[in-house]
Amino acid sequence: MLQQRSSGLLLHITSLPSPHGLGDLGTEAYRFVDFLSAAGQTYWQILPTTPVDPGAGFSPYSSPSAFAGNVLVISLDKLVEDGLLTAKEVQSAELPLSNRANLWLVSERKMPLLRRAADVFRRTANNTQLVDYELFCQQEAHWLNDYALFTALQHDTGEYWWVRWTPELVRREPEALAHELDRLRDPIEEIKVLQFLFFRQWNALRDYCFAHRIHIIGDIPIYVQHNSPDVWAFQDLFKLDDEGMPTFVAGAPPDMFSEEGQRWGNPVYDWPKHEESGFQWWIRRLRHQMKLYSLTRLDHFLGFAVYWEIPASEPSARIGEWIKAPIDAFMDTMYRQFGHLPVIAEDLGERAPDVQPHLRHFQIPGMRVLQFGFGADVATSTHAPHNHVINTVAYTGTHDNPTTSGWWANATPEVRANVKAYLGIRPTAETVTVHLNRLAMLSVARLVILPLQDALNLDESHRMNTPGVASPGVASSGEATPDSGSGNWSWRYTPDQLTDHVAEQLLRLTQMAGRI
Image 1: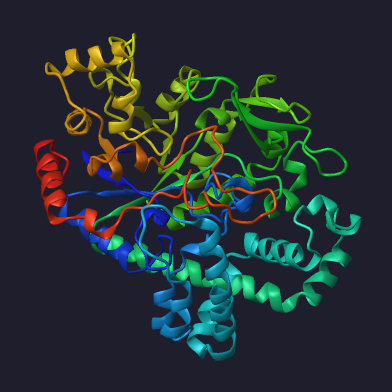
Image 2 (image 1 turned 45 degrees about the horizontal axis):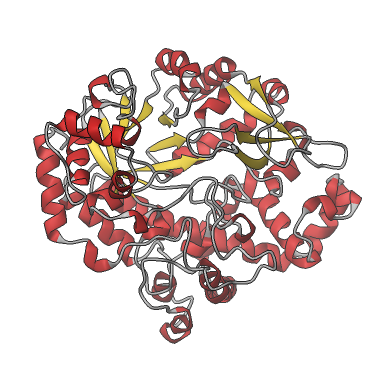
C-alpha cells in the first residue's frame, strides 16, 4: 500500500497553539500544514478526533462516539469569520498561552459559545447554508440521529448512563424514541448543527492539506465506550446482559506498559453477530474514516485476531482470557467492500506475532518503534532498524511512549550500551534524539513518522500520554482540580517552537533519506 518513501510528523489537533486554551482547527492548524510542507513532509498523523469524555480523563481513545467530531476543537475565530460569533464574545474564552491545556476550563468556557454559534446559525443561515446542512444531516444520518438523540437525552434527564434511563428508552421502543425526538427537537438540532460546524471546518483543513500535498493519517480505536450511542443503538453487537450492562470488558494483560495490565472497561464485541450482519457496522465506520483521512491507523489491531476478555466483575486486567476474533472473514469482507483498504495496523505488544501472517497476507503495513529496538534482543528485534521491512511505518516513539530524550534519561545500562554500540558513538542527552531521528529516517521502511516532540528535541515534560496512569485533575465530582492542566492528553507546543530553522533541518534530513 505504501508506494514510495515518505515521512511525516505525529501531532494531535489539541496540541496546536490557540488563544482559547486548546488546539483547534483555526489559524495554527494551517500554519502547521505550511511547516510540514516547508520541511518536506508528506503526512500529518493525528489521534482520534471523536468527542472526549471528562470522566475518562479526556482520552481521545475513550470516546462517547465512534463517528461524531470533537466540537471542542472547533475554531472560535473561524466562527467569528462566519458571522456566528463576535470578536468580543470569544474574548471570554481566551486563556494564556501554555504548553499544557486545562481541558476542564476550556470546556467550561467554550461550550456556551459553541451553543450560541449554533443558535445563530439556525436563525440566520441562508438558503445555500441550509442546503449544505440538510445534505450533511442526510449523508450522516446513520450515526448522527442516534448521537444527537443520545446526547440530548443525557442533558435532559440529567442521567449520564443510558442503562439508567426508562426501560422503554433502554430497549429503544419505537414509540418512546419518536416521543423524545419530538419533545427534544431543539436540543437535537443544536447538537446536529455543532457537528455540521465541526465537519465543515475539518473539511476545509483537509482540503488545504491536499492543496499542499499533505495527507492526514487518522486513528481509530478498536473499541467504543459502553456509554455511547453506538452501543445503545446496536446492543446486539456487544456482549451485554439483559439490562444492557457489559458481561465482559476489554483490556490488555500485564505487559511492558503496566504490571497490572490495562482494564479499559469497553464492552467487547459479539463477533459472531457482526459476522452474521456482514460486518455492516464496521463497513460504515471505515467508510466514515476514509472520507476524513488518506490513511487510518487501526489501534490495537491484535483485537481483530485475538482479544483479552475480562469478566466485567473483575476489578483489574490480571484475570481474563484470550478469545479469537474472525480476522480473516473481517478483512475479506472489507476488501470486497472497498477494494483498497488504506490502513496502518498498530501491531505492537507481546502478541504481535499473532497478527503478522494476516498483515503479510493482506499486505497491511505494521508499526516499528525504535525505542523498543535496543533491549537484550537487539540482534533479532523487529524494532531495531536493521530488521525493518519495506511495507511498514517506523517511529522513534508514539503518543504512548516517552519522548526520545525522556526515554534515554530512564534507559537501562544495557539499552544505553546497545545504543552506543549501534551508533558507534556515545550519544548525550542533547544528541540522542537527533541520532534516533536519523536512524528512523534512514530505515528501509517506506513511511517514517516522528512525534513533533522528537522533531523539536523536547524532554520528558512534553510527553503526551503515560498508559495505565490516570490523569491528574479528573475529579469524581466532575470539577476541575489544581492539576487539571497537566497529565495525559494535555500537551501543546508554543508558537515560538515551530521555527524556520527546525523546518530547514528536517528538510535536509528528509532529502538525504530520499523521502521527499
